[in-house]
Image (cartoon, rainbow, N blue to C red; front, side):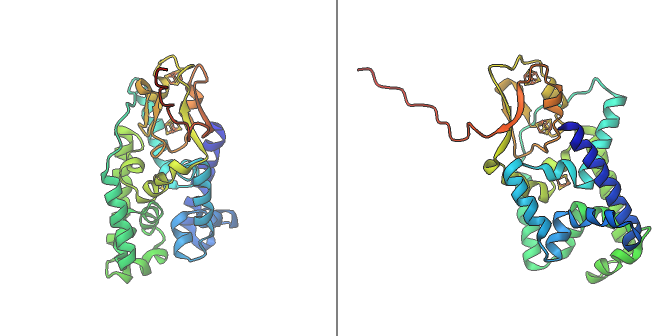
Length: 266
Ligand code: SF4
Ligand code: SF4
Ligand code: SF4
């Protein structure tokens, strides 16, 4: 599963870059990368991809973040290089911050009242588009012109955002995805309804810490056998590294289990 997701993510990144840099001159298969993105689909009012991703998230969690989003994949590349440069540095669980929900509310509010600039600077696809505008200005000139900002500033905003996201990823994993990105936060909000979860089997776990060490979303706490699935980006690094098959992507069979009440003594 992990190999398949990595392959798919790289293919989608390649296709996205072709589309961003070549526009309508890109090969037909590259066009799919744009149609597969949540935000362009929603904006074009075709809503096709958006609906598909909502359903997919309800079933499997944030697989969009593991495969299709180019900003997710470039972070994974930065994290992979960091692992090669400094293999001793491990990730550790961090509590999810509540600020991401404030960002999501601000983002949705800005869409409702028509303040487009917020989306232009924080949506992952628009970040890539802004940066690409420096080599293909025709695509974004209208976008930025619509809010009275020059293309140069838009392009600079895109490059600055990408550099900042990559530095943040180098320093501490998928931080942008788990702490800031409104799309990821929105998808994460659906996790409690997801049919499948990443979960630790407490009977099989030997507390080797390998899964927590490798989790770039910093959402595994081995000590408590906890996986925060709202932040999990379904990279499957943890399932691949576990020596005892104790952490698995599985049907949510325990979702409705309740601790039984103690029977009063007769
Ligand atoms: S959280 Fe946002 S930036 Fe990260 S992969 Fe998901 S959509 Fe892309
Ligand atoms: S890698 Fe497997 S055995 Fe090791 S701590 Fe994680 S779940 Fe437990
Ligand atoms: S819990 Fe596992 S699948 Fe989820 S982000 Fe962490 S390592 Fe990846």
